[in-house]
Image (tube, rainbow, N blue to C red; front, side):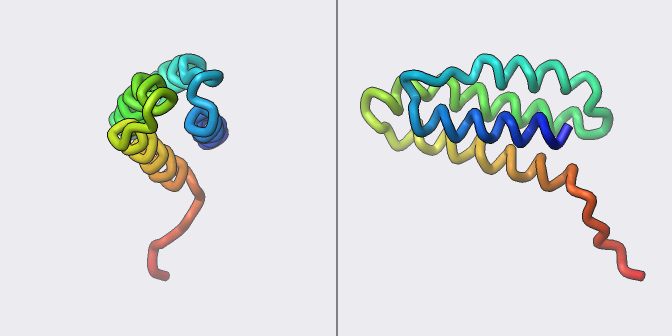
Length: 96
C-alpha cells in the first residue's frame, strides 16, 4: 500500500510540474483499486482519493492561470498523501 501511495505522490508532483501533459486518472484508478483492501484505513484512502481528484480537476486552472486555488488543491493532495504514507510506516512510538 505504501508503495502505491508513493507512486501516486510522484504522479501528483509530475502533474503539478507539467499540468498540461500529465493526468492523474491512472493515480485515481490505482487508489480506487487499493481502497478495497485498506481495512481500517479505508476512510483515509477515500480522503486521499478526494484530494487527488480535486487536484486532477484543478490541473486546467493551474496550466492556464496558475490559480492559487488550483495550487492549494495540489498542496492538499500532497499533504493527504504524506499523511497516508506516514501511517503505513513501521514506526513504533509505544513507550517501553
